[in-house]
Length: 245
Image (cartoon, rainbow, N blue to C red; front, side, top):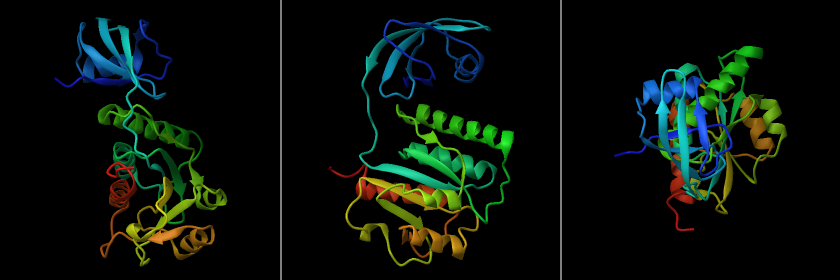
C-alpha cells in the first residue's frame, strides 16, 4: 500500500511528538482520510524524510510520533531554474506542478509585455503563496524531499540584469538551435519561457544581449505550459535524470 507523504514547515527530529491543526489537519483528516495508527512519511524540505505514526486524530488536532529518519535523495544531477512568463490561472498552476514533478530546482515568475495577468501588492503576495503551495503539494506527490522555492515575481528587465547561470537558454521558436547541439554539457541551467503569446522581439533581443542562447523544440508552436514540460523533460533526458553521470 502506498504511504501518504506530508510536508511540514517545521523542524523535525526522531522520537519527536508533534501536533497538527489547521490546514495540515484538514488535509490528513478530510482529504487523505487517515486514521489513528496509520503510518505516514513526513518531510520539511531540508533533505531526507521521516517515518511517523498518527497516534491520535480528532476534529481539533492530530498527534504524530516521528520514528526514523531516511536520507532519501531523488534529485537530478542537473540543477534547473525555470524563469516562467506568468500565464493565466490554471495554466500557471499546471506549469509549476509539472515542472516540480520533473525536477526543477527554482522557479522565478516573470512579468513580460504580453503577460495578461495583473498582480500587485496583496494579490501578488497571495498568488505567490498559492504557487508555493502548488509546488509543496507536487513534492508530496512525487516523492521529492527538497522543495523548489518560488521566488518573488520580477519584471523581464529586472530578471535579465542578474546573471543566473553559466548556461542560459531562451525558448525561441524562431531559433534554429536545439538542446542537443549545446556544448559543453551543463550541470546547471536557467530556462526562460514566455507567457501566452511568447516574448516580443525586444525582449528576445534583450535576452540574447545578456548571454542567453535560443533553442527551439521542433517545428510546432507549443502552449506555454507544454513548452515548460517539454523543455525540462528533454533536458533531464539529455543531461539529468537519465544520464549515467
